[in-house]
Image 1 (tube, chains in turn blue, orange):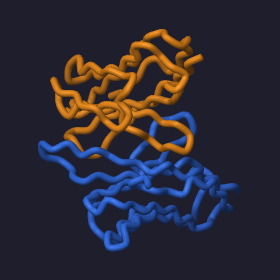
Image 2: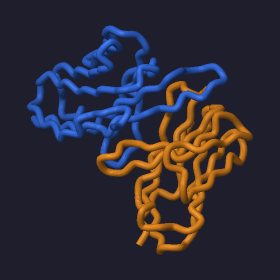
Image 3: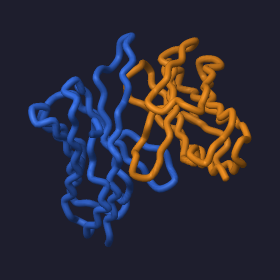
Length: 115
Length: 112
């Protein structure tokens, strides 16, 4: 069983839809959670970063973490064709300090938003 | 400020050939990483360098070696390429180990 599971999709939605992307994980030591967006033939770029259970909002994007269920989500409101990309969840056991915090990634979900 | 740069962008090798992938960052970051990305597998860590002068194995280190040349540069070497190493390779850096990682544009490698 992989430490982080993410539905690879592909997911296709009409413009303006609310998109829900999800990851589950098995390692309860994960404390910090990230969502990366990767456009075709580009490197991943950080979209959201959170470390506590609950919601974190940034514009049209909301990251949700439920540590008790080992489940994280990314919601995209009013989705746009420019949101079409692969979305990768990532998590780590620690951040900062002198200890190394290895990022463990999900497989990525391919999202297409059509006009 | 270029961020993280990688060379080459694309490379074709024959089985058994060797090559070095180059990575450089201009953000004064301490930590650097090499990943490979394969369909359905997400990003898998090959090697990392938590700080200048140190390197450690990640999840899939077999068939690779790395060199942290200085604080800016972190290279990945394939001594004897195999078709299983066909992949897209990403270099990343972070201010400190475990902090947000910034990725380069990737190197597409095809081993025939």
